[in-house]
Length: 390
Image (cartoon, rainbow, N blue to C red):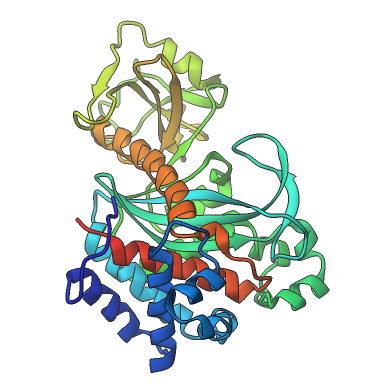
């Protein structure tokens, strides 16, 4: 996990220098970027522009405010270099790209994207900004690479609000609603990271991202995914009595009737739970895995059901008897430990985001600008990168 930054000339400083050198910022903007990041690292109070300026130079508050809401042309190269540096630290085939929802409680209605809605984590209605974080995670080490705002419906339908907050217009060939939806934002970010050659083996996301469009788009990009499910979700169970002798390899038959995940897992009598150990410091879990399909296509000639959407489902049970249910399109020969590791990375990312919200001031932005909120979030990601130690 990230730790405190090193001194001058440390690898952490060289890492930040490389990121700033790759941006299109002026020397003055780079100086203010470093001042802002140092302010986010220092102190234990609320990390507002006023407190950051007070820790450096009191007269720089207006300059930092203008820096946050200024031209956003440098944010793209800065974000790309952030992703490349994160890839060098924790990227690889065993790394996970973890998508997590971020809730920033707010008072009032003028901050960009604020609306009263249901918080998925608590199930209660509250006033907050909804953001999405994407983080690279491997073996418990986490670096966020992007944080994006999700607009509620009332903001999408109100051009005056969008204009006042400086929200960019959706592309002419895209629907306004789809352009600001969470799953579309995640798909755009995954496409951007893939174009940068950022290495990750699987995408782990919350259950509401598991739409058909989301899964099919990732499958078209040859991206593997892991998604939580309910034990009551229905699947086609594999028919293990079917023999593929004399037929092409890889042909798998599934039963015609769908069953719930709970029924499929429990009907495997005699199948023992497999122990998946992460390490001595983490709680081991027991897992039971089953090969299923969400949709099948029948070929009339020989009545073989060929899976179009073949996935794995598995149940994990911890030492307290609590169970979680998951679905993935990872290859059939994937070892159970990798599935368990993907789930573990999601929980660790959730804890890391909560830490970042408090320690590095992700919740502290008080402006009303789209550019300002995203630049503040980018500075927070750069702060995590700067303080990261292997």
